[in-house]
Image 1 (cartoon, rainbow, N blue to C red):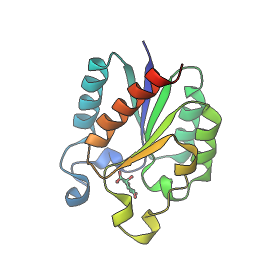
Image 2: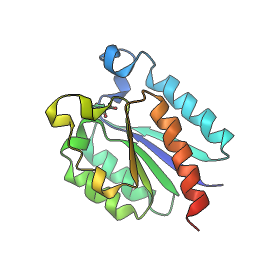
Image 3: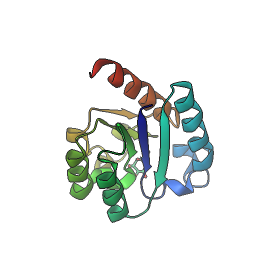
Length: 147
Ligand code: DQA
């Protein structure tokens, strides 16, 4: 069974109570439940991880080498400036999909740049919590095409 790691970055633990007009009303627990359900339908093993700390996310990415077959990451605010996360992703040698609940291209100017985007397979942005489900579908497709 293929193993997928899902990483949620800073402040995503507050989903449901944080800027609900932008990020929706579902809690992270609800979203993680949906991710786990979709993963089992795709016969994937999934682990979800949230941290507000850049270094903890770097550590998790380093540990993912050899332990997982793909990573889905919402780096949250770190997307816009963390070269450490970018380098950790590049070092994993795994297919990584970047996701954002909101469409980062129709918001403030500082959100339009992702320093992560150049080191991921692709990005899914703007479909609310469905981005995680769409990313799982993308990963399944990648597993089919990458021998
Ligand atoms: C986000 C977008 C980021 O700009 C923001 O800092 C977040 C969440 C999203 O999922 O839409 O915390 O990654």
